[in-house]
Image 1: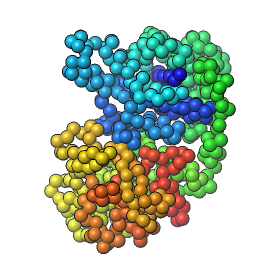
Image 2: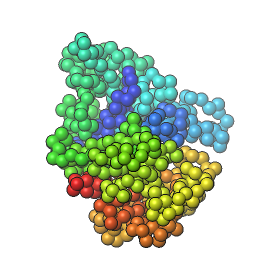
Image 3: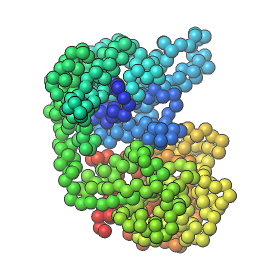
Length: 543
């Protein structure tokens, strides 16, 4: 029978529930069990697709086209398993579903209430689309005590009673602050947080203690006494210098043993297979090489806005035993720089990445970055908008189209990038226009790209002629410029299967200049690095 694990957070936000959930998934996998991971976010947005990166970090995209919280990226990276649309839900979606059913008369005229209708919808999500996985892990967003999260927790309480508490484990991740001046950790915030859970009818089975330091045994006993758990079920979750060391830290604290012991599964579990995590730990901090990648972006002070990009570079670094230093370059600042200043800003980078983004702010700076990389033979990887700005730059400076631009940024221009109004998805035609709702209406999810034989793109992907990568955009390069660009040494080396949509451009004569319409970072894993990032690091090592 499937076992359910719910992970809540207490005291403060940003404790790392997503990393904790992903690490627990990895631990259980290492013991031979199958795992499914899910996220329940209390906010009232239907999904994070229209939320600013300043508010919520990056929007992670699944193969089947869901715009989700960035924590699903952690789940995929730690377990190697792909998430689905059905693995993420928000408070807004829960209410949307209930109100839609009310409008359609599904409640047969009943008064629609938070309990039972909202909580029933929470329980429906918990049980939906499961396929006999050994464990399903649910991360509950927000902090215990938040008003938005109450109905999720009430739904979980009801669910525990329905399936039997022997089949459900509740892990509470909480802050145990270390007071440096007193040289001691303080347990009171944890006690208060657990008390909040108890008020809602929930009692944690395991308490995961985030702290700067390992929690002393006497403090573990104190937490156990006040929070109604065994001392061995109080687990230290200290800071580490790299997130990929966390599964090993939890294993050393016997977290996997305590979970399996609770479910009486220790006797049927495998011996932990931690070899791949040990290999990563041995590489981290023992770098043989060192490179610097300049990322030209506009959310430079918010690294969570580029979480998957950062991790993909880390994976490429691990694969090549190379420390990849990131130099954040604000694209808005580049707009105001003269050629000498631009040369100075790029003087210490071995490669340049222009990542995805939306809106006109900072675009001209990104165009300058693409131009600098092209002219000075610096390895360049453009991602989504990074491909579009490269096309705009080439149209202006190679084809002589002075007013070349994207209709996303300027209506009065020669559009080399335009709104895509229709495309094929799973054999069906998708249609959009300028008046379509913003949320969930982009070209989303995995699409096939056909690669040109013997191109750089094909070589990067191991000689493949067809690849599948994830997309998130609503503007496309106009393929009518293909022949003109080819005459100037620019090749469209990847296209949609119908040949209408450019997916990859490259410059064969350049050291390494490749730009893609998709987001290769979403599928990168620490044990299976995305080919484009691996290739970028390798070429940068040949400096």
